[in-house]
Image 1 (tube, rainbow, N blue to C red):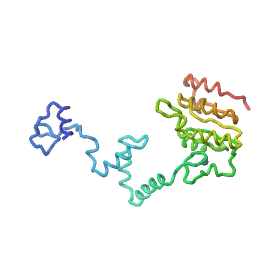
Image 2: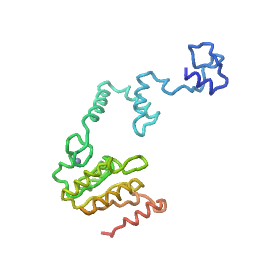
Image 3: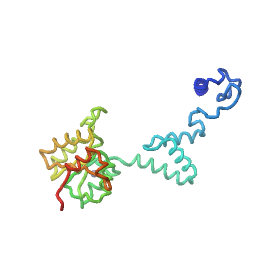
Length: 239
Ligand SMILES: [Zn+2]
């Protein structure tokens, strides 16, 4: 009924009362509208509509991608779809956070914290687990991590107490940490968080912040002033 009223209001040519009340989406002369204002999901059978709706909740997935993924899933063998559904449930049930560094882990203490070859005197502080994954992919960093779980953002009601800052201070003050590297992206929230943690940690250890500069292949001419200023600030002597 809602659908019918919407159509009538947006198209003045529609009859106020349909000659066939059971057929809701038609013009007064019985024609079906060419360019339908029907809600998108009405064109899908119900279970397919539900799948598309759920997929649309995923980040970066719009209506078209959700439809493409859903239709692809329907074409796959049932065993494959079962495995996908099981993997989703298992990951959700089994993956928690490491009690030491708060990185995602299926064990109480994560693989990085347990690895005997990591340098336990250096801790790299990041906002999110995806930053740990990004740094690990460089294969350049030998130390441990500490995941904050977000950034200080008073506008969004996120204060230091909502983040894993207290455990970080405790960890650094109690263990022999020689350096804490703050690897937090430059932004208002990032800079606030960096400044706040830096002040708290300075009494216990050396605190550094990663340098920010130009991307590989980037052109000086096209870099914005803040990026260029940061790149100059983070300069270092040639080896
Ligand atoms: Zn860990």
